[in-house]
Amino acid sequence: MQKFLIIFFFLFINPSNIRAEETNYFLSLKKNKVYVRYGPGKNYPIKYIYKKKFLPIKVIDKKDNFRRIIDHKKNSGWIHQIMLRKSNSLIILEEKIVFKKNSKFSKPLVKLEKGRLVIIKKCEISWCKIETDDYTGWIDTKNVWGI
Image (cartoon, rainbow, N blue to C red):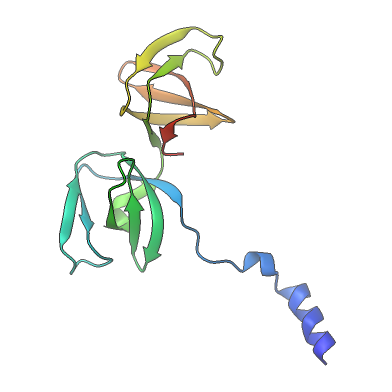
């Protein structure tokens, strides 16, 4: 009987599908005004307010409809999931050059300063096509926050 249960378990229940809820992934802010709270509920006081739409944040914990987040400056707190969206931006952590194509040998377009927020159009291996102000081009993904 025990052999039957073990065989049944491995045939019909795939242990690789049984896992803890995922954390440590990036999302971005949906609105220009997002409250960050001390705890996972609207009854917790507001810790601070983000005022930057598309700001990329990292989810480090979940509780009900709230996500515990951390930003590129190591600030953390809880945000209601309705204020978050799939990540579509990143922050430059050191000066970067935007290239016309996804190669360091292509034409350089502009230099971006540390701390700059850019919108991601698409990513390929270690390069992302980004958009910022009047420029669209490619940056390498080393030393960026958001992917």
